[in-house]
Image (cartoon, rainbow, N blue to C red; front, side):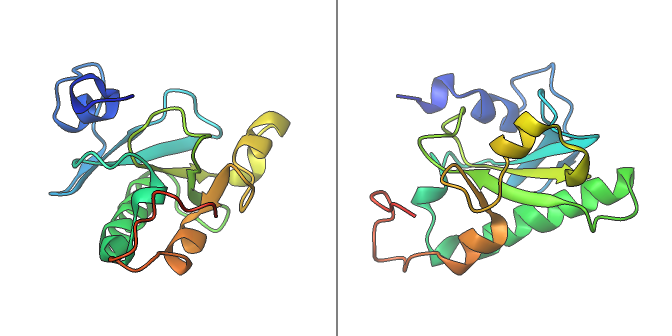
Length: 149
């Protein structure tokens, strides 16, 4: 089980991982380049608070999710002017490699190779778009830990 002390994304968010360049930062998130990019521009928005995965999100997190997406768009716009061919989303447990909430922003999505298109296939069992997650947030009084969506 991942703990905050040994979570690489917690270390990056708290700036303990010196080798990572932060592209953007707010009070709630940091954004940096993915170390295994799926396309020309592939960034991760990571929460500063340790949230294990998207199954732990509720309607109380809607503004946080929107901030992650909107901040990723800002960073990506600095690198490429047209974001029409972009993909934003989360790997769905148990298919997430780091047990810390992180949103992928990928552009252009159409240039991903076959394997990456499978890994980041929207609305598959293993990857959900930001729009899907926002549309399916459970109420705050319901634990989303056992969600199977």
